[in-house]
Image (cartoon, rainbow, N blue to C red; front, top):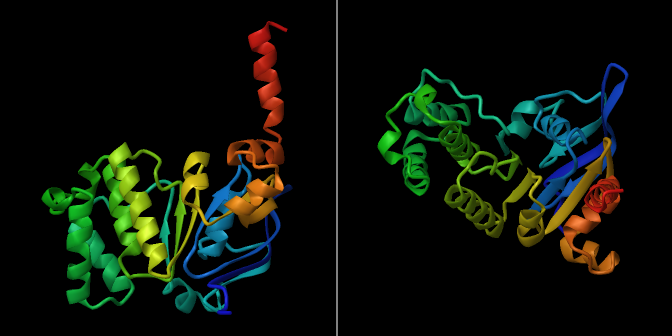
Length: 256
């Protein structure tokens, strides 16, 4: 069996007195889509930032394709792509200029950059505005450019934080198709989402985090079978305390 593309071991992150991530350990394998689920404030974004080297852990390690993200950042980051929940692009660059800049950062030959940019711009209906400055783009358009940039260097693993937020239904569908296509090519997709229907229908595995701790890590079908064939939404609510909210809503509806 091949080595996992990612190994997170006992990752923790503390901010003052608050432990945002508490002893998180899991692995990701080549050729799978893994959904990262949790309530607001559960530690999803903090975990993703530690895995991508944007935030140092208070303790623990993360390795990408065998390279420690903190001890060997250049080697590790060359093998990953990252799409944040809020795109923070260089507004004074044109879309094409930004993507060419990303290609240079990852040392992709210019000819390959052009070959990869064109079909992606066409896919997301950005070809006609590729020569416009990014600060004239809407949030959704900037998100599409960020997604193109995350996949541009053909990384082994792509981290995506709420990738469909702010996108219209067609664009969201394109993102899902892009994720599946790359999974089928042997790539790994690790993405956070609050849309449990997406996680249930397209993920090979889900990892659920609550209050900084991993509370579930299993294939979707296996997790549902272990929980009496419940929906992923019901399982999520049970594991994260959301049933209390259901009871409160019911009480309000009943006039209690």
